Length: 170
Image (tube, rainbow, N blue to C red; front, side, top):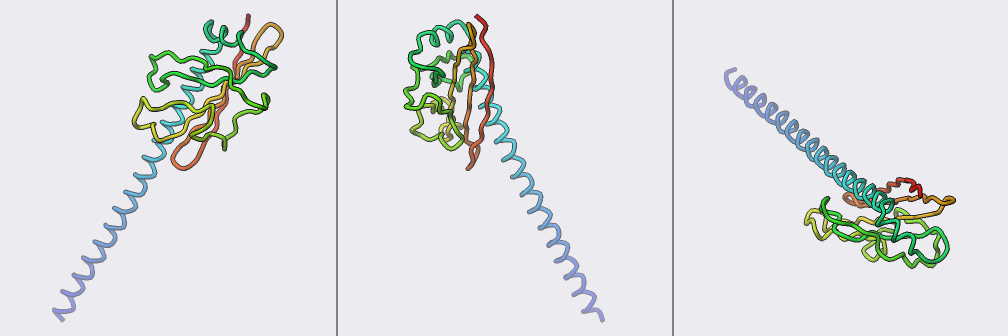
């Protein structure tokens, strides 16, 4: 009878270890998923800040001068240049994007390493391997301008899309 009690204690200890091990694995999985979500949210926040900065720059006096020198039919499409990884750096509109279809807007599947709207992220090693594309669309509304900033960005293995529209009153 004594041997059965000792064996029962061993089984009980193994069962407790199995339950504890399963709990540790589950907690680790939840932590990893949470960290991935936090990282994706940080990337989305950064992309949104770049999108807003590009729209605000386009609405500024310097941006308006670049828009006024635009050529061809509306809407005018611009890409963004400058070090967007440093919030204190100057960004500016690149030359007007020479798109064969001026009405084509940046779609979620068009942000590639060869896109004319690709933003250089080499200033931040954490972002260097990810793709961020920003397209600025400017249209006149009478004497005023409508400015739309479209952002496509990579979070992990998927792409996300965001858009904001503002106005510049002359």
